[in-house]
Amino acid sequence: MSYPLTRDQHLELYYFMKLNRALDEQLVRLFRQNVVVGGLYSNLGQEATSVGTAYALEKRDWIAPMIRNVGGLLVKGFKPRDILMQYMARKDSPTMGKDGTSHFGDLKVRHVVSPISMLGDLVPVMTGVAIAGRYLGQNIVAMTWVGDGATSTGAFHEGLNFAATQRAALVLVVENNQWAYSTPVAKQVPLHNLADRAKAYGIASSIVDGNDVVAVYQTAKEAVDRCRAGNGPVLIEAKTMRMKGHAQHDPAEYVPKEMFEYWEARDPIARYEKYLTENNIWDAKSKAGLDARIDKELKEELEFAEKSPLPPPDLAEQGVYCEGCHTVEAEWKRSKKEVTPPQSSVKPEWEVADFGGFDLASTISSKAAAAAGNGGKSAASAPSGKSMRNSPEPKSNGQKASLQKPNERPEKSRIAEAERVPFGRGPKGKAGRK
Image 1 (cartoon, helix red, strand yellow):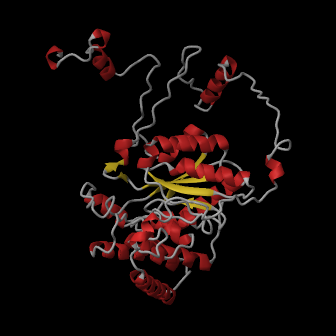
Image 2: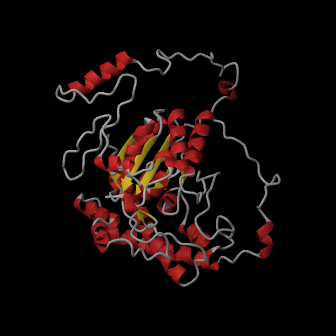
Image 3: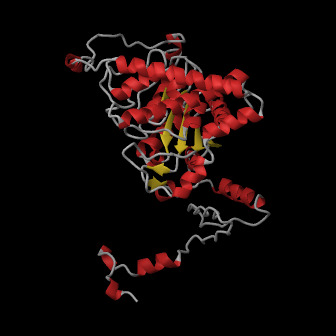
């Protein structure tokens, strides 16, 4: 499905991406001047993913950004001064100087949940936000981002399974930026496409070029509409690249030089500038005007942030506990009668034809269907009543992967097993090997 953008929307996407990068570069300069007091995590090269996905949401929707999703914060209405003061730990920052990184949000107006440092933990949190929105009749969509490394955490899988079973309106964006700190994707997961993880939970997924902001927006908009229609969660894998180390203290010397060169040629902002020019969406005057606007705004925002004082000592004890300082109340968009008995009551019945048991007839039928789709060749069979081993994935170099028979083990496995001493005493020493 296509979601055409107006000229103003195209230019706004450019504005947010370019502002994101300019802000990132300004923070790096402040970090080197020791003005930024906390850790600094660059999002250089990932602007299209954050901006394009967040731009697909509506004002009522919720997001939970991570350290490299500054673009999403800008789309949601935060100003550069908020982010500058946060990293500078100033009194007028969103956390009033109590945090020197990105741990801030806005539950009242912008619908932003603060980041959680434990990676993957925002997946179950935002699943809860999506379910709460449905319960209150708000018809919202919740979105959060994780990196490739976070897809190997327990919280990611537990949260995604919970979202799937509850058909939560959750859009989960996996930013496959190739590195989990210094660990490449191939070293921590045996998959080429992380979107394949969605198959295990029976939910929809998409793969998109994370450096193409228009493609990212189109993919995210389709996912958001699907979620809002009640069709369950969607996982989007955005293939992109982290063009700096994990943080400013990390020189990323473990990344091959050729890899940086490859992704630098696919810079999301340079690509979008070319797209806008080739499609006659702007001209040199329009570009110059936008760039001048960003420079002026960022200069004014920095001056505001630098004038903000450091927090006074007596502020440290304030805001630690809530003692009736504000009211926490749900925003109902539906009648409470709809979700309270007797109107919400259902009969405690569960009807399943086979109660989850092994059905030989259906198994034979599915095998026959698989054989028909395989040009009439019969699929590898398994003994009756036992599950059949999945066939291996085709190799990426085009070579045909050999199928193993159900009871056949690779030669290496048989050798390793033969070398083991009975009764679990561990492998023999090298002296006992041929």
